[in-house]
Amino acid sequence: MKLWTIAIKDTLVRFRDRNALIMMLVAPLLISLVMGLAFGGSGGGVRIGEIPVVVVNEDQGEFGAEVVAVLAGLMADGAEDGRFLFTITEMQDKQTALREVEQGNARGVIYIPQNFSQRLTAPDGPPVVLEVYTDPTANVSPGIIRGVVNRIVAEFNTVALSNVVAVIQLTRLLAQADEPPSAAVLANMANLEQILAEESQALDGPQGENGRIVLATELQGEAETINLLNYFVPSMAIFFLMFTMFDGTRSILKEEQDGTLYRLMTTPTSRAAVLLGKIGGTFLTGLLQFLVLVAVSWLFFQVDWGNSPVGVLLLALATVAAATSLGAFVAAFARDVNQAGVLGTAVTLVFAILGGNFIDYRQFPGFLAIFSKMTINRWSLEGFVELTLGHASLYEVMPNVAVLIGLATLFFVLSLVLFERRFVR
Image (cartoon, rainbow, N blue to C red; front, side, top):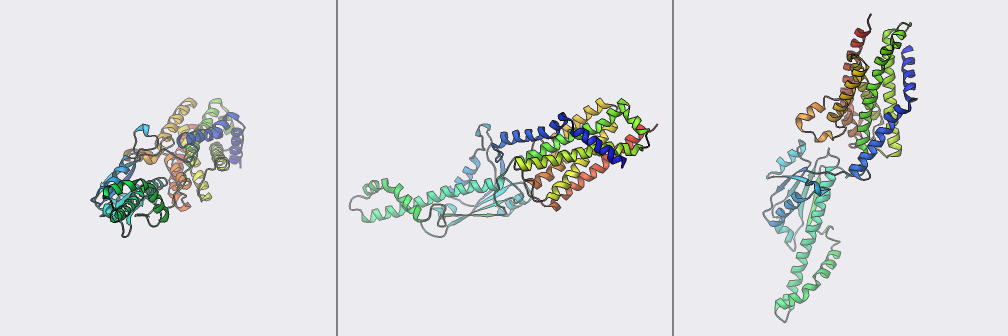
């Protein structure tokens, strides 16, 4: 009972501090909003480049090569930075290419079949199928790949239709002309644009069912509109939570320095209850901070926290527990308040960088990803991104919850051991 009294008292004191409220709630929401606007306009888009795509081109004609050239030459949004939209890798075997997607080495495969050019320009016969396979676990790239290929298909269908119409019209002119064919052709070529438009309308447009190319897509879900705040709000919430947790546990050393902690321990309240109460107050503060950020971002910024409220709650509990325990461990390890402040700030910044709070952890190279997985931030952010962007189920984020609880237990036990040694007289 005394434990909870101490915890609730510290929590109320914290939430009555205006400066603390700005740091805990206003700052993460404001920075998330600014980052969302900066990187995605209204929060609905992002500059994406160098998406790994494998192209299998079995066509020997010019049109197959043209498709590859167009894909390789597309510039990413904001072309002044010199980034291409796709990083194209050409392979000869479709099954090998599909394995690249399954293993996460590529985001999609574009398959150009044999005789693509020949069948595209043929005036009759069945349409040629251009196949697109995309990574079902990716959130953004499948829609981009399909959109680009759809545009290419539309352009090639227009070219193919114009070729067919031109052949038909020229054949008719050559058969009916009384004057030399070249003059008849030249006299009627001015009407080709009108003829093309009429034939296109009759065929239900170049993207209709009668187009010369049919786009076949597999392995992908529905295209999504990505709100970047779904990434930045959890990211900043975790980042500022770490500051709160280190500051909260550092208050134990502040009370030790002022002498109030020892006076509290001389009361009938046990030393363990005092320490657990102080740490518990930090935990309650962090949990309320996180839940308020979730509620405010959902109500006012339309952040989609996924389809599993239980998953969000469990992940929040595990994240706050791990951050609180780490803060307690640092406080117990430090010699005084100042050293705890320096260590806490250093750990917060290093964990934020490695954990993906500033740079998308999915872009880390292999060796950096290993260090990333040593941080609380990475496991927490990965779980929240799966919930917000991937609409993962509770079962899918349970590994993240389990790792965070394991880290919380480890740091909590270490902190209690160090505090026990520190305060034993």
